[in-house]
Length: 443
Ligand code: NDP
Image 1 (tube, helix red, strand yellow):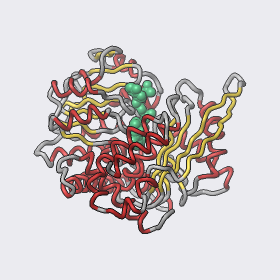
Image 2 (cartoon, helix red, strand yellow; image 1 turned 90 degrees about the vertical axis):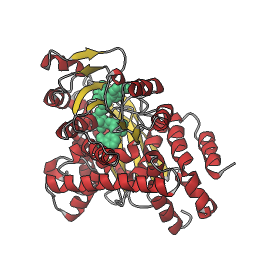
Image 3 (cartoon, rainbow, N blue to C red; image 1 turned 45 degrees about the vertical axis):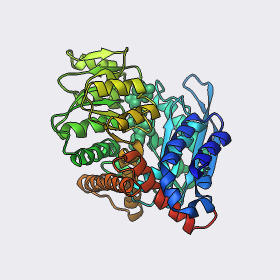
Image 4 (tube, rainbow, N blue to C red; image 1 turned 120 degrees about the vertical axis):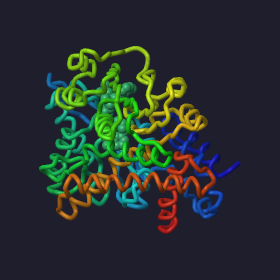
C-alpha cells in the first residue's frame, strides 16, 4: 500500500465520525502521491502523520444570558493545526452545524491555503454552534464576550490570529476584540477583519470575493477567455458572494442568480447588488426580499440555483452545496468554468465530473485565499502601525491571486498532472510546509 493510501486509512480510523475532515484529507493526500514518492524523506520523517494531526484542539463551554434572562450554553472550538511557516491563522465560524470535524476540515485546508499565499501564516480554525440568526445585538455581544473569555488564553498576535467566517463579520469581530483588549490590556493585531477605526485593513471586506474573481480571471485568460459578456451564477449572499458578484460585474460579466439558505433569486437583467447589500448587510433579512426591489426577478425555494444556465459558476455559500446532479446540469447548460469561493462547496463526485469534462475548475483553497492573504496584510500593517490605501491593498491582493494561480499551474505541470489545479494547489501548498517541517526537526 502506498504511503498516501496508508495515511488516508489512518485519518479515517483515528478520527471516527469526522466525515468532512476525512473528505478534505483524502482530497489532499490523493494528490500528494507523486510528491511524496519523489521525496522519501517525507515518509521517513512522518510528515503526513504529523500534518494530519492538529498541534492542538481546544474545546470549551460558552455560557451566556439571552434577552429573556435565561442561561444558554454553546460549544466553543479552536483547532491549531500547523504553525511550521507562521502563527496559526484562520477564521471563526458561528453556525448551528459546527462540530469538531467541520472545524478540523477547515483548519486542515487552511494550512495549504495559507502556504499558497506566499505569506508567513500557519493553519487554524475555530468557531461555535451558536446561531447568530435572529439574535439581538446584545445577545451576540454576550456570546462573543463569553467566547473570548476562554479563547484569549490560546491566541496572540504572534501565536494565533483568528478572523471571520460564516456568521462572523465586522460586528462580531468588534465584540471579540473589545473583550480581548479588556482582559489582556493589550492593543495588538490579535484578530483580523477589524473595523477601520481600530486597526482594520481597507479592502479586507472585499478581499475573498474580489480575490476569487482575480484568480478566475487569470485562469480564464490562460485559456483565451475572460469575464467579459459572461453569465455568472453566484451562490450565497454573504461576504464572499456579495464581493464576488461586485467584481465579476465590474469585469463585464452579468450575475443572474444568488441565494441564501432559504431560497434563490433569478434576475435576467443582472443582480442589483445595492439591493442585496441593503437586505443582507444592513437589514440582515432573507434574500426573498429581493423581489420587492426588482419586481421582474423571480424567487424560488424549489430546485437548485445551479439549474440557472450560466457560463461561470461561483459557489460561495458553504461546504458540499454543489452535488453531482448539479454539476451534470451545469455542464448540460454549457458552463465553462467553476470557481470555489466557499470552502469545499463541490462534492468529490462533482469535482471529478468537472475535471473529466474539461471544465476549468478552481478549488477553494486556491481561489478563495484572497481573504486570508489580505488578513496577513492587515497583520503587517498592524505590526508596522501603518494603514495602506485601498488601491495598495487591492493591488497586492491582485498580485497574490495571480501568483497562486501560476504556482498551482506550474506545480501541476512539474508533477505530471498538467491542467489539474486541484492537485497543483495541494502540491504547491504542501511542499513549502513540508520542507519547513523537515528543517525544524521532529516537533
Ligand atoms: P456569510 O455568513 O457572510 O455568508 C454565507 C452565505 O451562504 C449566506 O448567504 C448563507 O445564507 C448562505 N448559505 C449558508 N448555508 C447555505 C446553504 N446550505 N444553502 C444555501 N446558502 C447557504 O459567510 P462567508 O461569505 O464569509 O463565507 C461563505 C463561504 O466562504 C464559507 O465556506 C467560508 O468558509 C468561505 N470563506 C470565507 C472567507 C471570508 O473571508 N469570509 C474566506 C475564505 C473562505 P443564510 O444567511 O440563510 O445562512
